[in-house]
Length: 424
Image 1 (cartoon, helix red, strand yellow):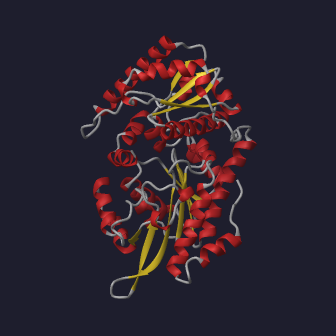
Image 2 (cartoon, helix red, strand yellow):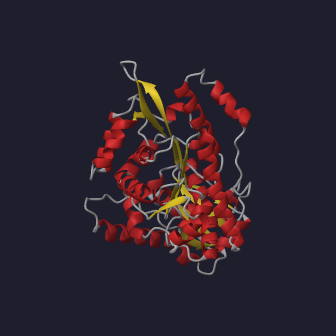
């Protein structure tokens, strides 16, 4: 992966700030956030987050440190200044001394420190961004990094690839717990480190200027890509035009839609189906142990809220009755999955719908399923990306994503459910 930084473009962003130092910082933060957002192999559909620390005037005219962090609901590829709400930094740093805080309490805590109360909720990673010492911080779900992070020996591989440049953080639930765990490890072992390698999750980089932090995330991603290539497991390239314009020209798609339409969840106009056909998809669907490997989980935890823990699998020769059985079997599996994990939860959970968001059709392609075209497209995008990551992960070892219990915790996380309700 190569840097997209352009001096002329960066200068245009600087000029747009009219000489205000804080606005210059924010403008460059928006610029490099968008550079990250342009790379689907770094972030996809709202994934990842970025921040910048700068000074702004208080009511009495004195300057105080603030931090702008990507807000919930914003996508890095199109982000603007309002999508990076500012908070007073010093109160956030006091959270280091708070041993416990629910994520709902954390949201209230962060909002209380926002300079503009009309802005979006800051990312759940806001405290981690605040605790890291550098001015600029970038967080991505790099495909190449995930192929390595989703290995049983991910920590050892990180050391082999990055040496001491990145601190290794074992998986911890995103939010308050992760901010504390990562901060403790960074303070103990992070001297000289330029970022974090989060097992089963992704990458963080940081720097004292926008270009340094951005180009570090690019460099670490490139190092992962090179490692995969050197071990015969390079990510298969993204292909343009993988989406089939008329999926209903294919009999299995018509039959699948008929089977799903009998469920009330999709409404009168649904379901919407998005069919993707590509060389990478064909190779993935031809995997002998497709059902087993695809059922292990999602490549990065936050994908679970969009595509559920596993796909439904069928054949190009399936007719309506075959798909009806496949959907019913999936619903039975999902209900059992919910019951065995909800029983272990400390709080009461309300089960979501039972239906799949992705269908893998051997002999045809990958299908995204949704209540509208956008939902189906997002599911298809993520499913294609998961397929490429899984193949690379299997190429260097064993694809070992987050376990079922942890995936369930994230799928039924109250903050994630709130985000989906807001989007709907």
